[in-house]
Image 1 (cartoon, rainbow, N blue to C red):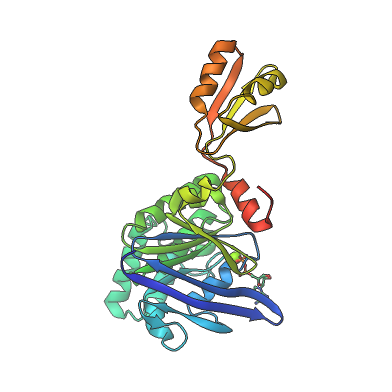
Image 2: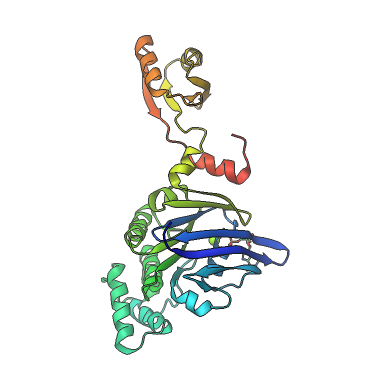
Length: 310
Ligand SMILES: Nc1ncnc2c1ncn2[C@@H]1O[C@H](COP(=O)(O)OP(=O)(O)O)[C@@H](O)[C@H]1O
Ligand SMILES: [Mg+2]
């Protein structure tokens, strides 16, 4: 990690007796695209609201580019662009008027505000709709307006709360593409409950559950925690017979038959793909599918957030 840009120190947030964020500490450095992954109610949005200065921590704090979000909130906020959950309000404003309004709120005046709005419009490919009112836009375009207001002051850090939530698959793809584009020059923190999103845009993932940090890893490291990592799955005629042969392999630790698929788990340090390919050839099995498993993110997620035994 190079330069430290976010330094969260023992962040806590209580709502009455509910502990929404429980002693969260983490650092984010240059070049990172960090995914907050967690089930609904995990505390992702609450953490983001604290980092962006919208909500005061019950205890703990965070430094943003060295500025304390509690005691030096204004300076901290300047470095951050924030996309809150849901859609932007001000539906009756046109895209351009709304962005000019946000630019002025961010301290631009006169021509500079117009210029900032114009460049955000260009950046987020809103050129076709600047004179349209926000309420008449599709969800995908509304989300782009949300992203445009987040980057209007060219912040070095972007905090995006479920940026693809509620979008259709094409719109999700588009927004992820935009995020990847921006990640070359900004530090990005996104929250999501979608596992594939972490894979698509992040180079680091934190799994949060019940307000606590459970895992902090790369997407590759995360998937390698899966018990399916390096397992081999096949679909074959007469799976019971094949299973009994494969379970005799010294490289196999365990064989499981589930929903018509046979999965062979490797013994520690063993590779399975070649020996299984050989066995298929030698025995002339009728195999319709054969794959080496990278691991299954959904299973890791369940295991981590529900403590499900591996
Ligand atoms: N304003 C609030 N008042 C009371 N409880 C809240 C409030 N906001 C969030 N919570 C609760 O705090 C927990 C964390 O919520 P949130 O941060 O929104 O989680 P996430 O974004 O991961 O879904 C949840 O149990 C939620 O119900
Ligand atoms: Mg949320």
